Length: 151
Image 1: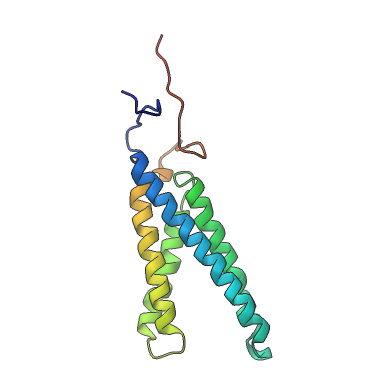
Image 2: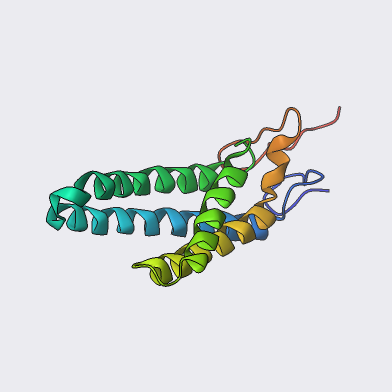
């Protein structure tokens, strides 16, 4: 059986629509992290000296997260542990912010990171990110595999 695109579905792989939605969510998160990076540059440029290194570290981390989400958008089933690492970090900071609710920036950070945890978790399920843990898991960048012909 082949789809309209001539691609044979592979057991365990997501549907093309689910895969596209999951990848789009990761791309949106990547762009949002780049927007946060731009905002971080503005904050870093105007922060006091006692906060400069911390704000620079935070700002540069946005590039790392943008890169992780971009990698997952391009090849969601080739990154062993990257989904889980991202979900752990963002989940942990979300919980921490809810616990420290009365601290400056906690409310804003909690809701922003809750959103990215939710979108990343949904994308993980839609893209079947856990497939990367299977031995020999691989995919092309566009997730298409050529149809094989039997003689």
